[in-house]
Image (cartoon, rainbow, N blue to C red; front, side, top):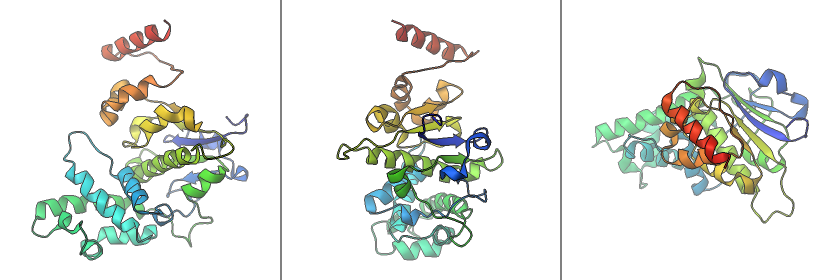
Length: 286
């Protein structure tokens, strides 16, 4: 990718690629609020309208198997509403940390019933989910602390510099909502920029997603894998076993696993995985 002068988005949870390939002079960006090189990023710069705000919120609160949809849909709708105020990450974290601030900003809207005082169990569940996002947002640098400003909209138009999303074993869980949101947003932006009304095909961007199962479900990833030929954004997925994707993506995992034109299988001692590898290999060589 580097030799061809193309661009990559690298999910690097073990920080194996960043030391070798990160190049500031190329305009590369590190998305990790615990790294001093992190630019200023704000959700207020990303949500241009209500539908986009809901898409952003869905990336932070994806549908989960074996969980009541209400405790995904409720926080998602409230967060999408808060995005429309165009807050800085510090403002949004402050609102999400205080119940009275959320109450004030949804009062009089159709979302007020989601956190009604008359349903304490329901209210507590929604508020707890929103506070998890607040913990991640509090890590983001303020505009004064960062050297540059960055957002996915501008980057997808110009595609200057690689993007590295890093973490460590001790920080990964805390950063997970933000990392998943950024990756999901980048998939969405690149697919939008590849619409057929552009005169010239945009520069290819390769997604390198190692240890995919360490992320939460990315709502846009299924579309990226099944439609990447149209958007010219190849995707490289690395994971330990098929069951990891099935746990995250359910029935969609079948289509996602069938799409890659090139598959590399390493040895496995798990019987079900071995059978799947064997059957996949036979079908691909027919």
